[in-house]
Length: 229
Ligand SMILES: Nc1ncnc2c1ncn2[C@@H]1O[C@H](COP(=O)(O)OP(=O)(O)OP(=O)(O)O)[C@@H](O)[C@H]1O
Ligand SMILES: O=P(O)(O)OC[C@H]1O[C@H](OP(=O)(O)OP(=O)(O)O)[C@H](O)[C@@H]1O
Image 1: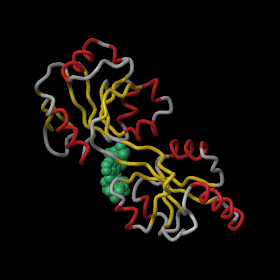
Image 2: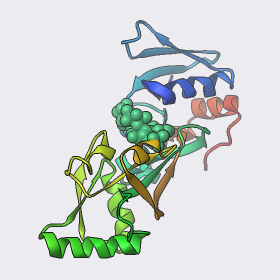
Image 3: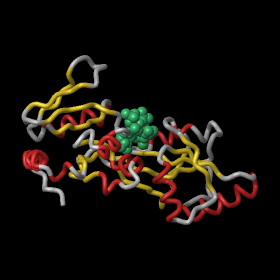
Image 4: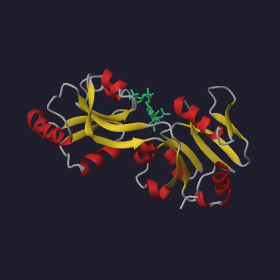
């Protein structure tokens, strides 16, 4: 029996159900709306579990589920060695969102990462503490800024409503997901054009050990997907 972990709410859950239905596997919630149970029809040997999108990478790496759907941003953020833990089987064509660095729109002289790095250096000298970037993507942001030699900052953890932290004076900049850009604009923030940290989309993933098993090969064939190498 293969266990498939799906996001438990919102667009990601609905579009995951649609993706599988278009491939002859009908997924549906079981029990009440508040129960996290679901079932699969149209294929044998597949069970479902509804999980927080942020928890699916860890459940896959641990092998408690053999298949999962979540954003590539969360896979890379949650799993340091993601390539050795999981296999990306197929981008699914929805859940497109960019992880970006954004600063106040009024920072007219900040037009890119080089300006940001200079502002961060001046900020520390002027204020005696490092410029604060609010984010929930600590691993990805640190790696990106290190790669671009930006050093004078500190990360402030923000698990939601991250765009509001600048107005609330708990941060000077943010790194968060954007899709239409509406939330950033509404909070008077602008994206630095050279600060796309990761372009994410919903992806079907497998636990790396399970990817080579016969039941997985059969499911991939049913879905018309190439066998992972
Ligand atoms: N506005 C959006 N448009 C498209 N995709 C988005 C949007 N916001 C978030 N996502 C993507 O949806 C996935 C889930 O994001 P979300 O922030 O809901 O994760 P999460 O908070 O860990 O989930 P949960 O709230 O269940 O714990 C991520 O891969 C993210 O990139
Ligand atoms: O660029 P936009 O189209 O404005 O989308 C970006 C927003 O979408 C997500 O929030 P959402 O309310 O979708 O989910 P959440 O409950 O995780 O905040 C994300 O956290 C951003 O705040």
